[in-house]
Structures are given as C-alpha cells and as structure tokens.
Length: 386
Figure 1 (tube, one colour):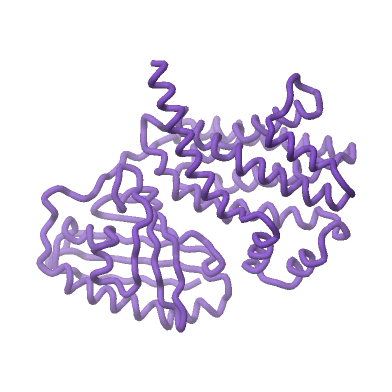
Figure 2 (figure 1 turned 45 degrees about the horizontal axis):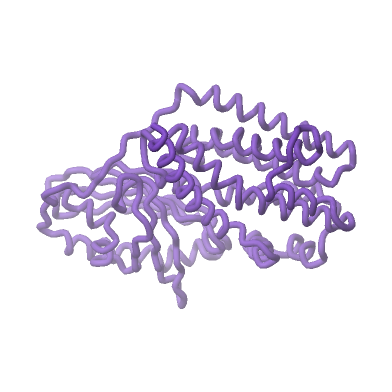
C-alpha cells in the first residue's frame, strides 16, 4: 500500500483555491497528470458526489488512465475521491482538505493506493510521489492572488441521513439472504442444475451485506434497498418457470433458465451461471436501480449521486466468483479456466473472464446509465398521472 500525505500552504483563501482542486480545466493548469471531466455529480459540477473524471498518470515508461469518482464532498473544505479499481489499481482513497491560514489556505492531501502487483507500490513512491510534489509547487504559483469566484462554484448537496431505518433494512436484507440460501439448498438436494446460480446469487447478497457492514459505500440505505428488490424479480421468475406461480417468466429469465437445463452437466453449470448473470445485469439491475431511486430518493437528490457507490461495488461483486470457485466440481470447468484460476493473479483471472464472452464491468456500467433513463421515464409517468 502506497501512502502519501502532503501539507502545503497556498497564497489564496479556500474559496479561491477550491475550483483549482475540483474543476478539471483549472486542475490542468498545475497538475502534471492530465485531468478530463467525464460527468458531473449530483447538483451539477465536478465537485459534488458522483462526479467522474479521468486522469492520465505517468507511471514510468507508460501512462495509465485512472477513472476517479467523487465519493464525498463538503465545498470548499473537503473532498474525498476514489479511483475505481481496475487491472492496475486494487484499492484507492484520496482526501483533500482546505482550511484558512494566515497566508491564505492550508492544504492537506492524503492518498492511499494499493496496486494489483506489490512491486508497483515501491515504483509509485519513486515516480508518483515526486510528480505530485512538483504539481503542488506549480499550484502554489497558479493560485497566488486568486480571488473567490463571484458565485461559488460549489453545489453542496444535503446529506441523506437514513440512520434511523438502517436496522430494519438490514433485517430485511438478512431475511432475503436466508431465503436465497434456502432456495439454493432446495435445488442442491434435488440435484437441480439451477443450484449453481442460486448459490452464486446467495453469495452475492452475502457480499453486499458485508459491504454494508464494512461501510464500503457512502449511502448504506441505498445499498440495502437493492437486495430485496433484486430477489423479488429473480424468485418470481424462477417460481413461474417451475410452475409454482401462475404465468410465464419474463423473456430474459425464460431464456436463462432454459439454458440452465440444456446440454451436459458442464454446460448446465457454465451456461446456467453465465445466462443468469446476463439476465440480472441486462434487465433486473437497471430497473432495480431505477425503482429504488424513484421510490426513495427522487425528492432528495439526483440519480447520479449514487454513481460513486455503484462503481465501488464493482470489485465487491467480483468476490462471489472467487468464493464460488471451491464449490464447483473441477471436472466441469474448462481447462483454460482451471489453469488461469490456479496459476495467475487476480488481475489476469478477471481479464480471462471478460474475454471468455461477457464484459461484466462494462455491462454493469451501461446498466447504471439505463437505470437513469428508466427512472426518468418513471418520474415522467408519475407526473403525468399526477
């Protein structure tokens, strides 16, 4: 884990310095790393929760693209951001605080960064640390004499306090997990090929609850609200497919569940998991994101506020595959998959899975955007009905 902690005195008040720390166009006047704004956050601007930017960071002979998202912000005093984990970065947290000082502002910038390969930590200390130091020196010159903007650039959004409802939401999530484990045990006892995906689904819920308990996301109520709604869509379709409920399952689950029962045991395992995952990500995920937002948060914030939490869930939702692996019969796995799992680090395993046919991180990102469009249509319909 690379750890940087800088303190710098800047010759301008915090309100004047703030835009230079948050506006990509102004950041490029002092940063040796290139910064590009991707999308604004809740309330507009790049200094609010959910805003995204891309940073091109020189790392030895190569340049790495890092996708950053604003995790929390209190303009013009504090901003916390995260690099979304990828093949290069395993974990990251950055925090910048500004406080008044006799000379103008006191800036503290803390960065914690864990790389996918241990040698990169030492390399980062040797390369990234001096670049960041030089950048801060350039910032001191750039902000000298800067005045606060006539209209503050910050668009601080009110915190969403759901402390009072979290115990009830956690109870509901844990009851959902128990129901999912019971369903997986039911199919295990029958030797039903649906047992593989139902196990994976339960493990995914388990990981989401662990993320809540570990405070891995900012909006913990939002995270817990997703769980029972995911489950409701999923179980309703399974029970319709088996005839336990009247009516036909939705088309995406009909296709996935039929593939689960097709072919030999190896095909049932692999296609059952793959097609169930696709059904969830392509259809259930965006509509669940939309419904949770519309039903609980539309009057409090914009949909994009949850972008940071959603992206940070990505690595957490890769954990179920690792936990599931020891439960799978090795003889049913393709040889290339077994070799990759046994001999390569996590980053290579992840890339092998993506190349194997379905880009899970990419499709999850697309699902968030589709959820926003669904939410807009739902709100428009509600306004029309009155």
